[in-house]
Structure formats: structure tokens, C-alpha cells
Image (cartoon, rainbow, N blue to C red; front, side, top):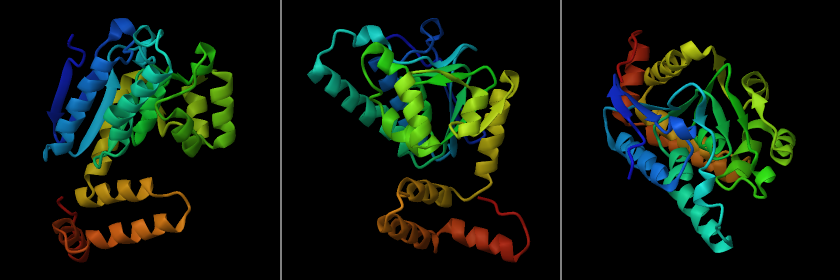
Length: 256
């Protein structure tokens, strides 16, 4: 398997992961999906990693989509196996990680690339980045969660427009509709991602984990409120709780 992730590093409690298929605009194939999964699993189990930052190599693309040459001749059964595998190993896996994952969009995030970004918890885009789900122009539809995650981020109407037209939007529009959290000049992208990570790392790790779980349960139904209450009570009695409450009462900054 060719090496695709040339830079994986843990520095000051941040796990950095950069996709390196610049010549292919960082397009996803099965080997790359496996490699990203393995590194993220390592970050998840590493107590020294508190926040993860995911980006692409170069300045053209975060991930410009799936590697179409890998599945252009698939039939329905092969396609079903492809998306089941990809969702389990990467897209749903990222969404369910209990450490915050920040996507730093350094260029095109299209098709599976945008679906990868949407599976992350936070998205920060360079000003020149463009996003879209162009699958309908290829005779397919988004299969890595795009039809499910996009409406929850930008509303059903905006999602319908993006998916049914297949049009790309720029970073400014993505910020306006809530697809990304922040837009910055390209030269400041990694700095902005790190600043966001540092803001998160000021807070209790156990609380971040439970907050992510509770947010995933938010669907407006009673079960979401029940899950929140359970996760809220689970924080009590932890070392993070003792430190956070103690620091507040002692009028000092907590040390998590």
C-alpha cells in the first residue's frame, strides 16, 4: 500500500493528521480510508491527544472526492458494500469519536471530501475553499452520509439545493449557511485550527466527551433529553468535576 499520510504527529496534546495524495487532489480510496481510520483510532486511544486536526496536503484540495476509478464499474451489490464499509470504518467512526475533530479545509471539499468534513465536529475553511456534493452529475447520490448530515447543518431547503443542483459554493456562502464554523485567509488556516483546539483543551476532557455524545443524541425527541440527563449526571464524581468545581470556588483557572 502506498504511503498516503506523510505527516501524523502529536504535539502539545493535538493530534495532527494530513492526507497526502496531492497529485490526486487527496481523493479517497479504500487504502486511504483504512489508513485514516488507523491513525484516528490511535489518536482516540492516546491519552496525550485531546483534540484532532485533519487537513489535506497542498493548497488545492482538502479532499476533492472519492477516487472514481476505484468504483466506476461497480454494480449495486458492490456499491452497497463500498458505502457500508466506508461509513463504518471512517465517516461514522469520525462522527462518533469522543475527542473533538477539527477539519481544516485547505481547498476543494467535494463529494466524499465534504462528507468527510461534515463527519468532523468543527470545520474551518480557507477563504479559497469550495464545497459541494456533485454526485448527481455522475449518476449517483451522496453515499457517505451527505444526505443525512448536510440537512442537520444547513437546513433541508439549503441541502436540497446543494445536492439536487450539484453546484459548488464558496467559503463565504458556506459560512453564511452554517456549513463551516469559520473562514480565514489560507496562510492562517492551521493557526486558526490550533487556536480552536486550544480553546477546547481549556475544558474538561470528560465533559467534552459527554457533550459530543449528548449533541449526537439531539433529535428533538424525549430520548435526546434523557440521554443528556444521563451524560450530565455521569460527569459528577469525576476528577474533572472535582477540579472544575474546586477551581471555580477557589477563583483560579482549572488544570485539566
